[in-house]
Amino acid sequence: MDIERRLDLVKQVGEEIITEEELRSLLQTKSHPIAYDGFEPSGKIHIAQGLLRAININKLTKAGIRFKMLVADWHGWANNKMGGNLDHIQLVGKYFVEVWKACGMDLKNVEFIWANDLVADREYWKKVMQVARNNTVQRILRCGEIMGRQEGEVQQASQILYPCMQAADIFQLQADICQLGMDQRKVNVLAREVAPKLGLPKPIIVSHHMLMGLAPPPEQGKDAVERAIAMKMSKSKPESAVFMLDSTEEIQRKINNSYCPPKQVHDNPVLEYCKYILFERFSSLRIERPEKFGGSVEVESYAALSQLYEEGLHPMDLKKAVGAYLDSLLTPVRNHFQKNAKAKKLYSQVHALQVTR
Image (cartoon, rainbow, N blue to C red; front, side, top):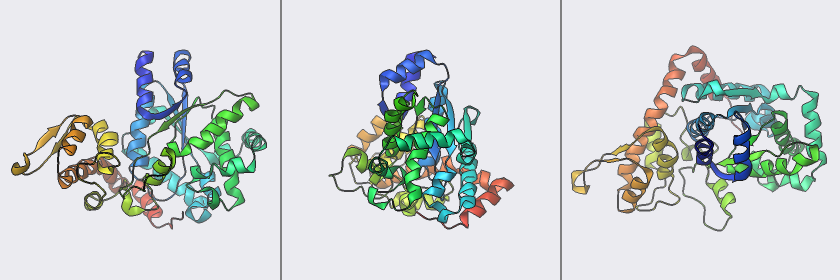
Protein backbone atom coordinates (compact mmCIF):
# COMPACT_ATOMS: atom_id res chain seq x y z
CA MET A 1 0.00 0.00 0.00
CA ASP A 2 1.43 3.39 -0.95
CA ILE A 3 2.03 6.21 1.52
CA GLU A 4 -0.95 8.28 0.38
CA ARG A 5 -3.39 5.41 0.90
CA ARG A 6 -1.92 4.61 4.34
CA LEU A 7 -2.08 8.29 5.30
CA ASP A 8 -5.69 8.51 4.13
CA LEU A 9 -6.71 5.59 6.33
CA VAL A 10 -5.18 7.23 9.40
CA LYS A 11 -6.79 10.57 8.52
CA GLN A 12 -10.18 8.83 8.36
CA VAL A 13 -9.67 8.01 12.05
CA GLY A 14 -8.07 11.28 13.16
CA GLU A 15 -10.42 14.18 13.81
CA GLU A 16 -7.24 16.01 14.78
CA ILE A 17 -3.66 15.01 13.96
CA ILE A 18 -0.63 16.57 15.65
CA THR A 19 1.10 16.78 13.28
CA GLU A 20 0.25 15.51 9.80
CA GLU A 21 3.77 16.28 8.56
CA GLU A 22 5.26 14.13 11.32
CA LEU A 23 2.79 11.36 10.53
CA ARG A 24 3.73 11.37 6.85
CA SER A 25 7.41 11.19 7.76
CA LEU A 26 6.75 8.30 10.16
CA LEU A 27 4.89 6.29 7.52
CA GLN A 28 7.70 6.94 5.02
CA THR A 29 10.40 5.71 7.39
CA LYS A 30 8.67 2.92 9.33
CA SER A 31 6.70 0.06 7.80
CA HIS A 32 4.94 -0.92 11.02
CA PRO A 33 4.69 2.00 13.47
CA ILE A 34 3.28 1.37 16.94
CA ALA A 35 -0.01 3.00 17.89
CA TYR A 36 -1.38 2.90 21.42
CA ASP A 37 -4.78 3.35 23.01
CA GLY A 38 -5.84 2.63 26.55
CA PHE A 39 -9.12 1.89 28.23
CA GLU A 40 -10.15 2.18 31.83
CA PRO A 41 -12.23 -0.91 32.71
CA SER A 42 -15.39 0.31 34.38
CA GLY A 43 -18.90 -1.01 33.98
CA LYS A 44 -20.51 -2.12 30.74
CA ILE A 45 -19.03 -1.39 27.31
CA HIS A 46 -21.02 0.75 24.86
CA ILE A 47 -20.87 1.00 21.06
CA ALA A 48 -18.41 3.91 21.06
CA GLN A 49 -15.92 1.75 22.99
CA GLY A 50 -16.85 -1.45 21.15
CA LEU A 51 -17.94 -1.01 17.53
CA LEU A 52 -16.33 2.37 16.85
CA ARG A 53 -13.03 1.39 18.46
CA ALA A 54 -12.91 -1.78 16.36
CA ILE A 55 -13.59 0.20 13.18
CA ASN A 56 -10.84 2.72 13.97
CA ILE A 57 -8.26 0.12 14.96
CA ASN A 58 -8.96 -1.95 11.85
CA LYS A 59 -8.26 1.08 9.65
CA LEU A 60 -4.93 1.64 11.38
CA THR A 61 -3.87 -2.01 11.15
CA LYS A 62 -4.87 -2.01 7.46
CA ALA A 63 -2.42 0.88 7.07
CA GLY A 64 0.34 -1.36 8.44
CA ILE A 65 0.25 -0.01 12.00
CA ARG A 66 0.68 -2.41 14.92
CA PHE A 67 -1.57 -1.67 17.85
CA LYS A 68 -0.91 -1.86 21.58
CA MET A 69 -4.08 -1.68 23.67
CA LEU A 70 -3.41 -0.88 27.31
CA VAL A 71 -5.83 -2.37 29.83
CA ALA A 72 -5.54 0.52 32.30
CA ASP A 73 -6.52 -1.39 35.43
CA TRP A 74 -4.24 0.54 37.79
CA HIS A 75 -5.47 3.80 36.29
CA GLY A 76 -9.06 2.76 37.01
CA TRP A 77 -7.96 1.90 40.54
CA ALA A 78 -6.38 5.35 40.96
CA ASN A 79 -9.63 6.87 39.65
CA ASN A 80 -11.79 4.92 42.15
CA LYS A 81 -13.66 2.98 39.47
CA MET A 82 -15.65 -0.09 40.56
CA GLY A 83 -15.50 1.16 44.13
CA GLY A 84 -11.70 1.16 44.02
CA ASN A 85 -11.59 -2.64 43.90
CA LEU A 86 -8.66 -3.69 41.66
CA ASP A 87 -9.89 -7.29 41.34
CA HIS A 88 -13.26 -6.07 40.05
CA ILE A 89 -11.58 -3.64 37.64
CA GLN A 90 -9.45 -6.46 36.22
CA LEU A 91 -12.55 -8.63 35.80
CA VAL A 92 -14.17 -5.84 33.77
CA GLY A 93 -10.98 -5.56 31.71
CA LYS A 94 -11.26 -9.24 30.73
CA TYR A 95 -14.92 -8.64 29.81
CA PHE A 96 -13.99 -5.74 27.50
CA VAL A 97 -11.39 -7.88 25.71
CA GLU A 98 -13.98 -10.64 25.28
CA VAL A 99 -16.38 -8.15 23.65
CA TRP A 100 -13.74 -7.09 21.12
CA LYS A 101 -13.14 -10.73 20.22
CA ALA A 102 -16.78 -10.93 19.14
CA CYS A 103 -17.22 -7.63 17.28
CA GLY A 104 -14.72 -7.88 14.45
CA MET A 105 -11.57 -6.23 15.80
CA ASP A 106 -8.40 -7.26 13.93
CA LEU A 107 -6.90 -9.00 16.95
CA LYS A 108 -3.97 -10.54 15.06
CA ASN A 109 -2.46 -7.05 14.89
CA VAL A 110 -3.51 -5.94 18.38
CA GLU A 111 -1.56 -6.70 21.54
CA PHE A 112 -3.34 -6.28 24.87
CA ILE A 113 -1.02 -5.09 27.64
CA TRP A 114 -2.09 -4.79 31.26
CA ALA A 115 -0.99 -1.81 33.35
CA ASN A 116 -0.66 -4.34 36.17
CA ASP A 117 2.34 -5.76 34.28
CA LEU A 118 3.86 -2.37 33.44
CA VAL A 119 3.94 -1.29 37.09
CA ALA A 120 6.17 -4.26 37.99
CA ASP A 121 8.99 -2.60 36.02
CA ARG A 122 11.18 -0.11 37.89
CA GLU A 123 11.87 1.72 34.62
CA TYR A 124 8.16 2.45 34.29
CA TRP A 125 8.05 4.24 37.64
CA LYS A 126 11.20 6.11 36.69
CA LYS A 127 9.31 7.51 33.68
CA VAL A 128 6.31 8.38 35.89
CA MET A 129 8.66 10.30 38.19
CA GLN A 130 10.29 12.07 35.24
CA VAL A 131 6.91 13.22 33.94
CA ALA A 132 5.91 14.41 37.42
CA ARG A 133 9.18 16.25 37.99
CA ASN A 134 8.80 18.15 34.72
CA ASN A 135 5.26 19.40 35.42
CA THR A 136 3.50 21.47 38.05
CA VAL A 137 0.59 20.20 40.12
CA GLN A 138 -1.66 22.74 38.36
CA ARG A 139 -0.61 21.46 34.93
CA ILE A 140 -1.47 17.91 35.98
CA LEU A 141 -4.82 18.98 37.45
CA ARG A 142 -5.76 20.53 34.12
CA CYS A 143 -5.57 17.02 32.67
CA GLY A 144 -8.49 15.91 34.91
CA GLU A 145 -10.86 15.50 31.96
CA ILE A 146 -8.90 12.43 30.76
CA MET A 147 -10.36 10.66 33.82
CA GLY A 148 -13.86 11.97 33.13
CA ARG A 149 -13.36 14.61 35.82
CA GLN A 150 -13.48 18.37 35.85
CA GLU A 151 -10.44 20.06 37.35
CA GLY A 152 -12.28 20.71 40.65
CA GLU A 153 -13.40 17.08 40.88
CA VAL A 154 -9.87 15.72 41.28
CA GLN A 155 -9.99 14.98 45.00
CA GLN A 156 -7.76 11.98 45.69
CA ALA A 157 -3.97 12.10 45.54
CA SER A 158 -4.09 8.95 43.40
CA GLN A 159 -5.87 10.94 40.70
CA ILE A 160 -2.85 13.23 40.41
CA LEU A 161 -0.76 10.16 39.63
CA TYR A 162 -3.10 9.18 36.77
CA PRO A 163 -1.94 11.71 34.09
CA CYS A 164 1.70 11.08 35.00
CA MET A 165 1.13 7.35 34.54
CA GLN A 166 -0.73 7.81 31.26
CA ALA A 167 2.08 9.91 29.81
CA ALA A 168 4.61 7.34 31.03
CA ASP A 169 2.54 4.59 29.35
CA ILE A 170 3.24 6.19 25.98
CA PHE A 171 7.00 6.14 26.56
CA GLN A 172 7.09 2.68 28.17
CA LEU A 173 5.16 1.15 25.25
CA GLN A 174 7.46 2.97 22.80
CA ALA A 175 4.41 4.25 20.95
CA ASP A 176 4.92 6.28 17.80
CA ILE A 177 1.24 7.28 17.74
CA CYS A 178 -1.23 8.08 20.53
CA GLN A 179 -4.60 7.03 19.11
CA LEU A 180 -7.16 8.07 21.70
CA GLY A 181 -10.29 10.21 21.81
CA MET A 182 -10.37 14.00 21.75
CA ASP A 183 -11.04 13.88 25.50
CA GLN A 184 -7.50 12.53 26.01
CA ARG A 185 -5.88 15.36 24.07
CA LYS A 186 -4.45 17.23 27.09
CA VAL A 187 -2.33 14.37 28.38
CA ASN A 188 -1.11 13.49 24.88
CA VAL A 189 0.01 17.10 24.40
CA LEU A 190 1.67 16.92 27.83
CA ALA A 191 3.59 13.84 26.64
CA ARG A 192 4.72 15.69 23.50
CA GLU A 193 5.90 18.60 25.63
CA VAL A 194 7.86 16.51 28.12
CA ALA A 195 9.37 13.99 25.64
CA PRO A 196 12.34 16.17 24.55
CA LYS A 197 13.21 16.81 28.21
CA LEU A 198 13.50 13.04 28.67
CA GLY A 199 15.51 12.59 25.46
CA LEU A 200 12.60 10.76 23.82
CA PRO A 201 10.84 11.31 20.45
CA LYS A 202 7.57 13.23 20.47
CA PRO A 203 4.57 10.92 19.97
CA ILE A 204 2.22 11.81 17.13
CA ILE A 205 -1.35 12.44 18.26
CA VAL A 206 -4.24 10.98 16.25
CA SER A 207 -7.40 11.91 18.15
CA HIS A 208 -10.56 10.13 17.06
CA HIS A 209 -14.11 11.48 17.10
CA MET A 210 -16.15 10.93 20.25
CA LEU A 211 -19.54 9.46 19.49
CA MET A 212 -22.52 11.45 20.76
CA GLY A 213 -24.83 10.12 23.43
CA LEU A 214 -28.55 9.88 22.75
CA ALA A 215 -29.52 12.84 24.97
CA PRO A 216 -29.98 16.43 23.73
CA PRO A 217 -26.64 18.25 23.41
CA PRO A 218 -25.66 21.07 25.79
CA GLU A 219 -26.22 24.69 24.84
CA GLN A 220 -23.60 26.42 22.74
CA GLY A 221 -20.94 28.38 24.56
CA LYS A 222 -18.21 25.87 25.42
CA ASP A 223 -15.17 25.49 23.18
CA ALA A 224 -15.35 22.68 20.63
CA VAL A 225 -13.42 20.08 22.65
CA GLU A 226 -15.27 20.77 25.93
CA ARG A 227 -18.59 20.57 24.12
CA ALA A 228 -17.66 17.27 22.46
CA ILE A 229 -16.70 15.85 25.84
CA ALA A 230 -20.03 16.98 27.32
CA MET A 231 -21.93 15.33 24.45
CA LYS A 232 -20.06 12.03 24.28
CA MET A 233 -21.68 8.69 24.97
CA SER A 234 -21.24 7.82 28.64
CA LYS A 235 -21.82 4.62 30.57
CA SER A 236 -22.71 6.73 33.62
CA LYS A 237 -25.91 7.75 31.76
CA PRO A 238 -27.30 4.35 30.70
CA GLU A 239 -30.30 5.67 28.79
CA SER A 240 -28.04 7.85 26.63
CA ALA A 241 -25.85 4.93 25.57
CA VAL A 242 -26.33 1.77 23.50
CA PHE A 243 -24.37 -1.02 25.16
CA MET A 244 -22.77 -3.92 23.33
CA LEU A 245 -25.00 -6.50 25.02
CA ASP A 246 -28.26 -4.57 24.94
CA SER A 247 -31.22 -6.64 23.76
CA THR A 248 -33.06 -5.96 20.49
CA GLU A 249 -35.86 -4.33 22.48
CA GLU A 250 -33.48 -2.14 24.52
CA ILE A 251 -31.67 -0.94 21.41
CA GLN A 252 -34.84 0.06 19.58
CA ARG A 253 -36.34 1.69 22.69
CA LYS A 254 -33.26 3.81 23.28
CA ILE A 255 -33.01 4.84 19.62
CA ASN A 256 -36.75 5.62 19.49
CA ASN A 257 -36.40 7.87 22.55
CA SER A 258 -33.24 9.58 21.32
CA TYR A 259 -32.70 13.21 20.37
CA CYS A 260 -33.29 13.45 16.62
CA PRO A 261 -34.89 16.77 15.55
CA PRO A 262 -36.64 16.77 12.14
CA LYS A 263 -34.46 18.02 9.26
CA GLN A 264 -31.51 18.73 11.63
CA VAL A 265 -28.28 17.03 10.60
CA HIS A 266 -25.87 18.82 12.95
CA ASP A 267 -25.71 17.47 16.55
CA ASN A 268 -27.95 14.54 15.63
CA PRO A 269 -26.76 11.32 17.35
CA VAL A 270 -28.86 8.98 15.19
CA LEU A 271 -27.24 10.34 12.04
CA GLU A 272 -23.83 10.17 13.77
CA TYR A 273 -24.24 6.42 14.23
CA CYS A 274 -24.97 6.14 10.51
CA LYS A 275 -21.85 8.13 9.59
CA TYR A 276 -19.33 6.63 11.99
CA ILE A 277 -20.62 3.06 12.36
CA LEU A 278 -23.28 1.89 9.92
CA PHE A 279 -21.79 3.20 6.67
CA GLU A 280 -18.45 1.76 7.82
CA ARG A 281 -19.98 -1.70 8.03
CA PHE A 282 -22.72 -1.63 5.37
CA SER A 283 -22.50 -0.50 1.73
CA SER A 284 -26.04 0.90 1.88
CA LEU A 285 -28.93 1.38 4.30
CA ARG A 286 -32.51 0.50 3.44
CA ILE A 287 -35.08 2.74 5.10
CA GLU A 288 -38.66 1.55 5.16
CA ARG A 289 -41.36 4.21 4.96
CA PRO A 290 -45.02 4.40 3.87
CA GLU A 291 -45.80 4.78 0.16
CA LYS A 292 -47.52 8.12 0.79
CA PHE A 293 -44.16 9.47 1.98
CA GLY A 294 -42.21 8.14 -0.99
CA GLY A 295 -41.92 4.45 -0.13
CA SER A 296 -38.83 2.54 0.96
CA VAL A 297 -35.46 3.85 -0.15
CA GLU A 298 -31.94 2.41 -0.42
CA VAL A 299 -29.33 4.98 0.60
CA GLU A 300 -25.73 4.37 -0.52
CA SER A 301 -23.78 7.10 1.29
CA TYR A 302 -23.92 9.30 4.36
CA ALA A 303 -24.02 12.40 2.16
CA ALA A 304 -27.15 11.09 0.44
CA LEU A 305 -28.74 10.19 3.79
CA SER A 306 -28.08 13.61 5.34
CA GLN A 307 -29.58 15.29 2.26
CA LEU A 308 -32.63 13.03 2.42
CA TYR A 309 -33.05 13.85 6.11
CA GLU A 310 -32.82 17.59 5.50
CA GLU A 311 -35.48 17.21 2.82
CA GLY A 312 -37.91 15.69 5.31
CA LEU A 313 -37.21 12.01 5.97
CA HIS A 314 -39.25 11.30 9.10
CA PRO A 315 -37.16 10.80 12.26
CA MET A 316 -39.06 7.64 13.22
CA ASP A 317 -38.40 6.03 9.84
CA LEU A 318 -34.69 6.77 10.31
CA LYS A 319 -34.74 5.53 13.92
CA LYS A 320 -36.42 2.25 13.01
CA ALA A 321 -33.75 1.52 10.38
CA VAL A 322 -30.83 2.55 12.60
CA GLY A 323 -32.10 0.42 15.49
CA ALA A 324 -32.37 -2.62 13.21
CA TYR A 325 -28.91 -2.20 11.68
CA LEU A 326 -27.27 -1.64 15.07
CA ASP A 327 -29.03 -4.74 16.38
CA SER A 328 -27.64 -6.79 13.49
CA LEU A 329 -24.10 -5.70 14.42
CA LEU A 330 -24.59 -6.52 18.09
CA THR A 331 -26.32 -9.87 17.57
CA PRO A 332 -22.99 -11.79 17.15
CA VAL A 333 -21.71 -10.24 20.38
CA ARG A 334 -24.84 -11.29 22.30
CA ASN A 335 -24.61 -14.77 20.78
CA HIS A 336 -20.97 -15.09 21.85
CA PHE A 337 -21.85 -14.26 25.45
CA GLN A 338 -24.83 -16.62 25.40
CA LYS A 339 -23.09 -19.61 23.83
CA ASN A 340 -19.50 -19.36 25.07
CA ALA A 341 -19.34 -20.65 28.66
CA LYS A 342 -16.32 -18.55 29.63
CA ALA A 343 -17.83 -15.36 28.21
CA LYS A 344 -21.22 -16.07 29.76
CA LYS A 345 -19.72 -16.53 33.23
CA LEU A 346 -17.62 -13.38 32.81
CA TYR A 347 -20.64 -11.26 31.89
CA SER A 348 -22.69 -12.56 34.81
CA GLN A 349 -19.85 -11.67 37.19
CA VAL A 350 -19.45 -8.16 35.74
CA HIS A 351 -23.20 -7.59 35.66
CA ALA A 352 -23.36 -8.24 39.40
CA LEU A 353 -20.73 -5.62 40.26
CA GLN A 354 -21.48 -2.12 41.49
CA VAL A 355 -20.35 0.53 39.03
CA THR A 356 -18.99 3.78 40.47
CA ARG A 357 -18.14 6.93 38.62
